[in-house]
Image 1: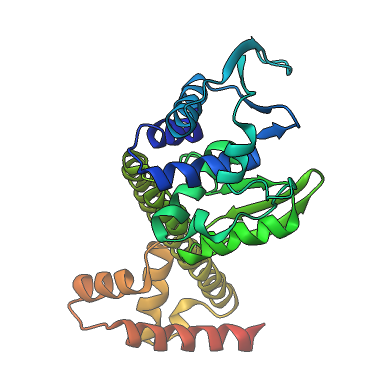
Image 2: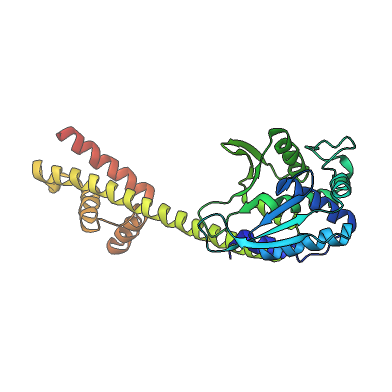
Length: 307
């Protein structure tokens, strides 16, 4: 089962008040139904969701949709479930703010459908059940999206999402518009809004694990970069030391510079701090890192004068 379906399965097992059920059903039918003069046709490939929508319709309008089970039209081997409502159609559509008194389709529902925060959340739940999908946080990117058939309606959905500070965006697609959220924190907030609390825990656990892995990788990359920088710097200095050795000999250097040259050649991969400590211990002197850097600059100056 995909992560999207796990979230949807958790959502439909939550409890809802009557007004919340109306908001949810209004959104679901608006985005996942074919409305004709004589019927409302709702198709889904998920048995749990079809049972959930059937139950809502029955509870709210004392209507029993006809259920037809058939093979999916795509190449999948699964089944699809068609709910056909052919009674109380006018009542249902008007109550769900999908049809006005003149019989025309309403693109954006009247305000009573999304009057308070709980109704807004329920409307978003219906939207997610009908046309939403969310990436598993184990994948390479965080992504939540809704496929919308109309630009004005997609703006309305963005307003609902942004009422909860979810920072949604719209992009046009060949078959309509996609409203999406990419920020992991905002997606987690959405899961809380739609009452998918177990999914929130899973999402946050995986997100925290990924962030920890990324942090470790960044630290390792920094350490590797420092090692490579140290080796590159050491190799450059060794070439200068060898130039001096071949041209005029290391004995031409004063004792302080000669010690540094010898130890740099001996300990090629040590950092400047580590090299200063080694020189200090083995020669019973106090060689600080800044002092070592100063002497290295002197050696480089001599090498440059010989080039």
